[in-house]
Length: 224
Image 1 (cartoon, rainbow, N blue to C red):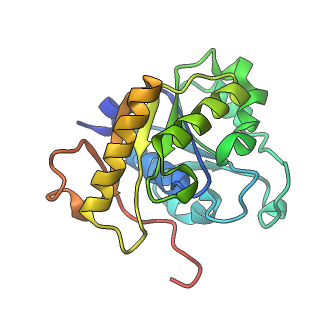
Image 2: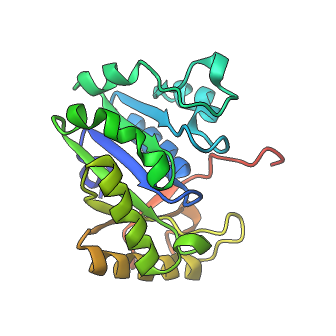
């Protein structure tokens, strides 16, 4: 399945609990869309978490043809409730495929409520990232609870789950399978279908039974 078949909507909104890997997924998705020949843009709307923001990969993204929309450079190192004015242009320009990287949990997702009237007029999909390795959401019940809280805060319905279970460099194929089992249970509880299972490309031969979205680790820790 191609990236355009798997992610056919013009706007892909990526949410989930803090630390589930939303930014890694968002960066890889934006790069994949650009590689497929799309005019792609990635909006960094995480105004809660000061770490692992997609804006940290500006050079990589722009070199690949992805337009990065983020807070002004003067505020790049500040954790403030500032939103990029360029976001309005992304919402209005229907020739661009946009990925919106939203802050973790309901508090971070609250930013979407401001843009809800505009978003609902577009071809969009709200995805919820599941990660069985995160203690705060490693049960299906708790993960489903966070999903519903994000829906309540944003006023938008989640229509897809993404399993992004990992343990950084220690990830094994079995870890990803455990995440797949969690995603299936969350799907059963919420009625939201699983869109894909995220894994480094090196796992493709080991996980042929899963519908994988292969990635390359882009969000490195400062000491790596």
